Length: 138
Length: 157
Image 1 (cartoon, rainbow over the protein chains, first blue to last red):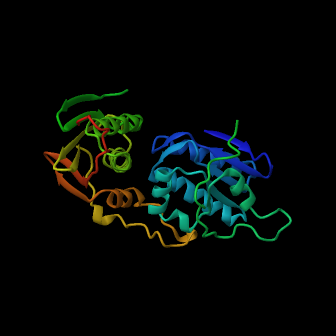
Image 2: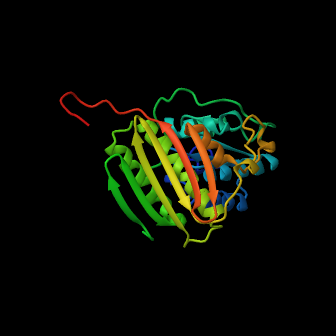
Image 3: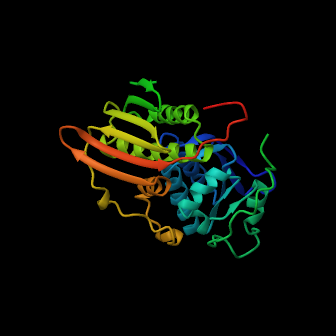
């Protein structure tokens, strides 16, 4: 599990879970998100590019933190899901309540500028057709 | 790896293990190996892995309430293009009818967090049935019609 600030938007934090995000691994995601929030992060991206599987436990962590961040005026976005992970997100209906972008760059850009009054808006956009990953962290 | 033993027979595989959450990865690998041996396509393998992972996580969390020393027995069987998965445990039974299914059309602030695992099992598998018996244990049976990967010419399954 890696966390890092976005290279282009330092006010956006990125969490990169790796491997299977099952019931055993979900607490680590929850802890990573809680840690970022404790340090004042309100704009968080969960980059799913290294995630080969996501369970209901992982989804619950994402839903819980997204809800909390929106209450604080922030937001949580997802990016880079594989087609099979995207299928799970679709089954769970997450694509209707969270923005799921094809790249980390797109997810970062999807956050409103700091000078804008809009933030924490419920998004209904679905990931565009995959065009490959970019901005993958070194 | 904690408390795992396996037996394998043509078109059937069994795995016995303890209710340690760390064994979920072993379960996933077991399903992948069974699917590979039966030449099941990757999409259906992923669905089987996901549903079985959810079911086992529920056994650990709810049947055994997080205690890692409970017994679980998993069997995968392929017959006439259909995989039957059986999971037996000896923990606390539960009534699936008592678990509300999530409203996936609800806005984020109204989303209930419970019931998602059971819902995913029902979406990914063709059927999900629970039977509870104080003496024989709790038995979960899931079934799914599966597709096979196309084999290169000259190879047989």
